[in-house]
Structure formats: structure tokens, C-alpha cells
Image (cartoon, rainbow, N blue to C red; front, side, top):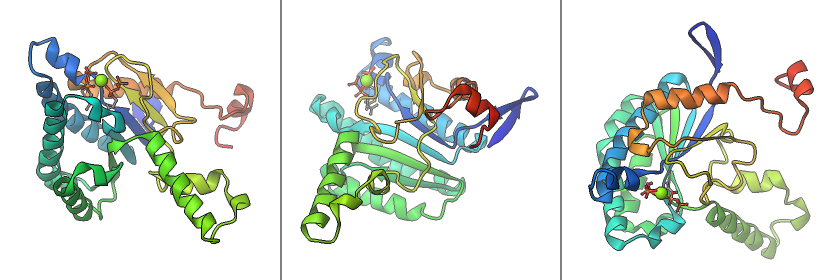
Length: 251
Ligand code: IPE
Ligand code: IPE
Ligand code: MG
């Protein structure tokens, strides 16, 4: 989709994936407990959901808790889970009103029964949203997803239901998380670190990467526009030459 900004045509990403990083440092800089940074991060989540919806982004995927974040102090993990549960309840109406369908990817079994049932309920309640798909990655890791799919395929081969020779990139892609969405066009990581931290290992193969030092609680609509602007100036070549892309941008 192309929108106009100041008379300039503006290419909007279909799918945006975000590592929301820097909450702890935002809080420490203010001598506040880390959880206060996570709390303030909710504002940035709202701004990003709203900004993406208004720009016509079809899918937004947010990394909320990684497979590795269990290594944090137990108190912080507990607070993060509490915050997630609180959000699932409180934001539901707004998401529904705005046509957003919510999904959660990651190992749900590790989140505990109570949270898992809240997730199920939120997914059911927003199922009909057709303006934007909001995916929250919780207890998610790109490697976990790949291992899970490998196990699933191995089971089918062992049961004689799948020919190993038939396994190709399409097979894998169709089993991984987010299979029904276009691959992310734009990856945003706030907080200044320039790494993927086990986010969408497979899906990011051709995604445009954008890193900003802005800490997540400070990430607002203006910061999002800046990321869109950076994206709109990129030439995506997918292995071809720049001249080829210039001659036939869609092909
Ligand atoms: C991101 O902020 C939120 C989660 C990982 C849950 P951090 O908590 O990682 O913030 P920093 O990186 O310590 O500043
Ligand atoms: C990545 O942030 C995970 C989330 C934002 C949920 P981290 O803060 O956990 O990443 P590292 O540990 O700095 O790589
Ligand atoms: Mg961090």
C-alpha cells in the first residue's frame, strides 16, 4: 500500500515486527524499578498499534517475552506475566472496536494455565477483526519454533504420512508461526542493541532491519513514522540486481 506524505508517495510495510527493548534502562535512568519501565512501555504499545492501524499495516508482531527471558529475576518475570494478563483483559474492547484480531505465538504451556486461558479467550473474542492482525510473541523463540516444526515433521515421517524428499522451504514455512501472514517487511528494534535475540529466525530472512536508540517507553507515533520513512527509502532486491528491480519493481 502507498500513502501520501507531504506530496511524496510512501510505501507502507504490510507486516511490521518489533523488538520492544529498553524498558529496564528507561526505568533505571529515572531511578525507578524496572517494572515501571515495562508499565510505561504499554503506552508505546498503544501508540504503535494505533499508528500501524492508521497507516494501513496488515500485521504487527510484537516481541513481549523471549524463551530466554526466564533467566531474569523471578520477581520481574512475575510482574511481566501479571502485566500481560492485565493487558489482555483491559485492551480487549479497544482491539475489537478497531477491528484488530489478537494472536499469541510461543510456548503457551510454559505460561501457566491461568494466563493461557486468558490468551485463548482474547483470541476467540477478537477472531473477527479484519483490519489488522496483532501477534504477541510470548515465551517465544525462533529456535523453539524451528525445533517444534522439526519434531512435528519427524513424527509424520516416522508414521509414514510424509515423504522426507517432499520437505522443502514451503513445507517449513507453512508450519512455522505466522505462516498465514506475509513475511515481515520491516523489523524495528528499539533500545539501541543491534541483534535479533532469537526473534523470528526464519521469517526475517529478507526483512528490512531498523534499529533505533530510542528506548521503548519513549517510542511514539513520530518515532514509528521515522521507521516507516526509513523503510520507504530502501530498495528490496531479493537477490536480484538494482537495475533489474528498477526495471520491474513488482516482478
Ligand atoms: C524489553 O525491555 C522488555 C522485555 C524484554 C520483556 P528490557 O527489560 O529488556 O529493557 P533493558 O534492555 O533492560 O533496558
Ligand atoms: C529481547 O530483548 C526480547 C524482548 C524484547 C521480549 P532482551 O532485552 O531480552 O534481549 P537481549 O537479552 O538484550 O539480547
Ligand atoms: Mg533488553
